Image 1 (tube, one colour):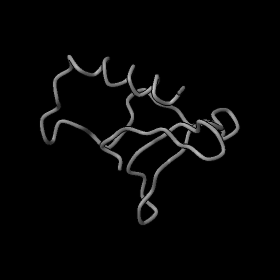
Image 2 (cartoon, rainbow, N blue to C red; image 1 turned 180 degrees about the vertical axis):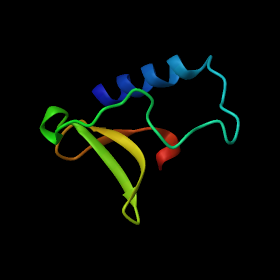
Image 3 (spheres, rainbow, N blue to C red; image 1 turned 180 degrees about the horizontal axis):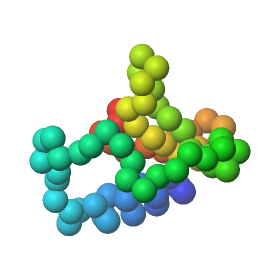
Image 4 (tube, one colour; image 1 turned 135 degrees about the vertical axis):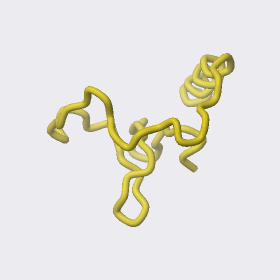
Length: 71
């Protein structure tokens, strides 16, 4: 049930947003800084061929929550 609520909230908050145009994104995080892995143990990196393509959050030992465009 928790997952259903989270997904409903995420989809309703994105309903009024516009989509980005192709080529509008950069490769870097603006204002980011390196952190120790123990500071954010719930954050995951989805990788293909050892390259990051999406992030996600650990919900429990069986589930990772990520954006629809990551699947």
